[in-house]
Image (cartoon, rainbow, N blue to C red; front, top):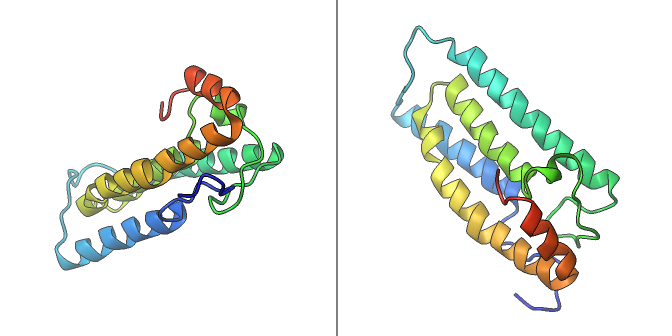
Length: 156
């Protein structure tokens, strides 16, 4: 990663990593179904609620970032540190929404494989995306970003 690049230079775009995790979970479930919830549980409804909450967090984070005048895609420069909306509680509400979305789908479809894809997805996001974003933001915004990090946790 060049220190002069005005992007985080992440290893994969997060929506692509999320889509791959979802596709892998469904493909593995097609090959060998692994339900994990009792049949009596209304898994479809519970999963839909979790997924809807994840989608709401995801949308709130994107609209907050856009209203602040910064770019959402990781391949574009960040223009400001956003510390309003969901960014008051977590530095990564978009990625948190993606994790919750995977959990919601796993519950809704009673698909243990989707839960299993959480680990590689989270590792890729944490080390291949967030670590690079944090280095980039510290390089670009210095003390402003460090103060934000001191106030707001990475996840929750």
